[in-house]
Length: 72
Image 1 (tube, rainbow, N blue to C red):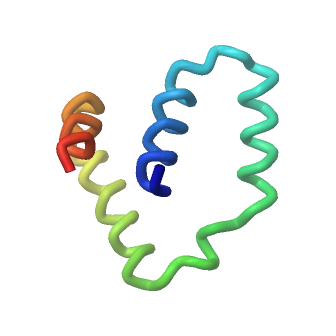
Image 2 (image 1 turned 30 degrees about the vertical axis):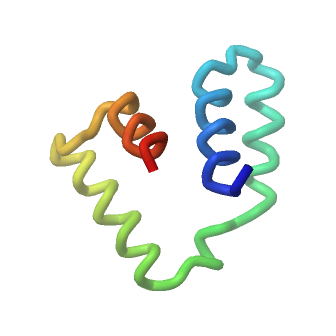
């Protein structure tokens, strides 16, 4: 299984996760690693454009995104 597939499986699992304690542990792990400082200027710009698109109401349903990645 490639890294992309692993990430998708983790995302699906995370969306279904209801255990508050586990979510807290994941948040702690996230706080320990500041990925933002490791991103390139272009990567940061793409993320910021994506956030702006969301704020502007430009959204793609989760099911559509997952389906498009499964076809690859």
